[in-house]
Image (cartoon, rainbow, N blue to C red; front, top):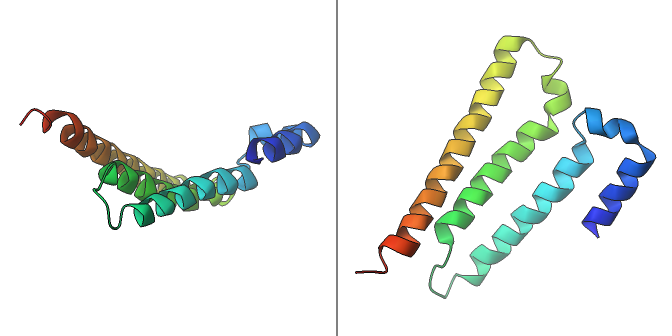
Length: 113
């Protein structure tokens, strides 16, 4: 349903390919954040499978969604402030990668013990 709505939106407004499409950023990231919260809820009383991966996805998407939604505003600011914001996004992405590594290490390297 989400892809259909976005396809229709891009079909009628082709200029959205050349700027930050706030609706697309919100709808896709919001759906993944909701699914991530459902996974957190489902593992409350179970073994924590994919806990660190889900945590990384939640932290990165929650922070970067806010940054990307303000993307059209960020482009009008001076370059010093823009670089700080994009460095913050880079830090969020590094944190996300660290959580992926922790999940990978816990899933594959600890099974042999």
